[in-house]
Length: 276
Ligand code: HPA
Image (cartoon, rainbow, N blue to C red; front, side, top):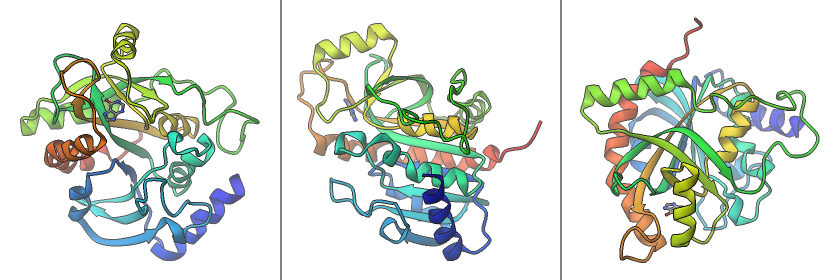
């Protein structure tokens, strides 16, 4: 695994030369607006990076984009792999591990989520304060990769406090009502039943989705600090009279894309890691 990561890193370095990304950003689907703001982008299709899967089961071609985002060298992952597609967790987190091996200091994870907290509305953004891993699996299962990190990683601050403060301050500055809460990561691909949503609320979840948790675990293992933002695309099952449809979820990501773009514009330059 470690050799595969190094192989992917050298293929990427060959394409981007010496540019060293500071921040890695995983964009959930429907957030294409954000990549329009990258200066001098270098795009590398996943199919051209060893050990990356070219295409997800949903048929979305994935790509890595390098470039300056509001003055900060960033590496974007556009298109991610989900556990529900049948990939082992180690493969789901491979792109994130590669970004970490490229030397990013901060990983920003974005996603589409259902709102469980009744104060949330479609179009809201939720800063992820913590997560519940309800996927029934863990990307660190199996022999520990000692080159990457410890056997039993601490998860006390899985989503960095410093990063959260940056996002909160940025939201105040630009006048966005940034929600906060706990993200429950579930396997999917079914949406939840209303009973499951009631259970998740009792467990302390504010939003639910089918991604993010494996990547957050892998980055914490590597000692890379993580920030997460959930785009609330729908009220979770049972909270409205409507049934859940994937097309509506995808469509609703666009409701928050502009706000997210403004938030990132403000926050990313402040997220550049400074040793204390
Ligand atoms: N449940 C799970 N995943 C999701 C949802 C949801 O309601 N909305 C977007 N992703």
